[in-house]
Length: 213
Image (cartoon, rainbow, N blue to C red; front, side, top):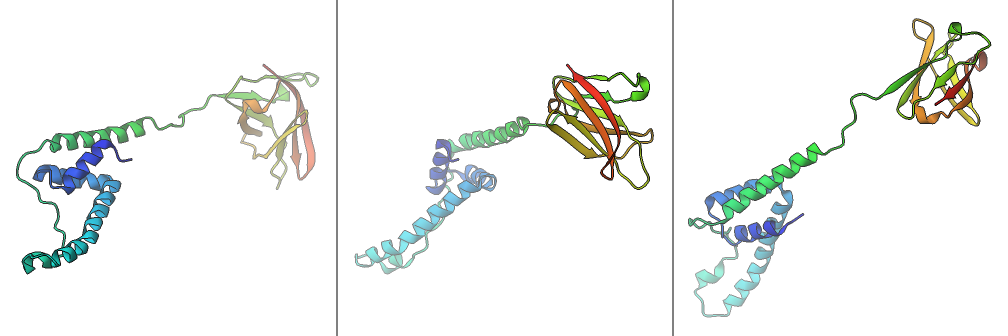
C-alpha cells in the first residue's frame, strides 16, 4: 500500500529532489518494496512516451536542430545540495522493518503441548459385573486405552458406540496388548456407551462403559 510518505519520496526521487545518499537509500528501499519500483518504471515510461510529442512540437519552432533531435529522457539529476529527504527515508525503512517484525511476532503459533487425559477400559481391574465410569474433561484431548484380543494377521478395529454416534479406527496393540486411541473430549457426551473390538468384521470383545463429568 502506497502511503503519503511514499508519494513524497517518489516525487522527490523522480524530480531530482534527493541528494546522492538519499537517492541510493531510496533505490535500496525499492528492492524491498517492489511496488515502489513499479511506480518509478511507470512514471519513466510515461515520460518517454510523451517525449516524441514534445519533439514534434518543437520541430516547428525556431529552435536549434540539436535541441530538437533528442528523444531520450534522462534519469533525474541528483543535486549535490543536502535535502531533508534522507531522514524521512530512514524513517520509512525503520517503519518497514518494524512492520515485518511485528507481523512475525503476532503470527499465531501452535501450542507445543496439548492437555491430554488418559481413560482406560480395563476389565481386569474391576468386577466383571461393574461398568467402568470414565470421567471426561471439559475440553482438550483424551486417549482411550482399550485391551485388544489380537489375532494373527488381523489389525483390530476399535469402536465407540454412544446413542447415534459411532467412532471407529483401526489400531495396532502395543506390547502390553492395549490399543490407544486419541480424540477430542467434546466428541463424547456423558452417558452409557459401548466399546467394541472387531476383527475381520466379527466382534471379538465388547466393553460397556459410562462417561461422566
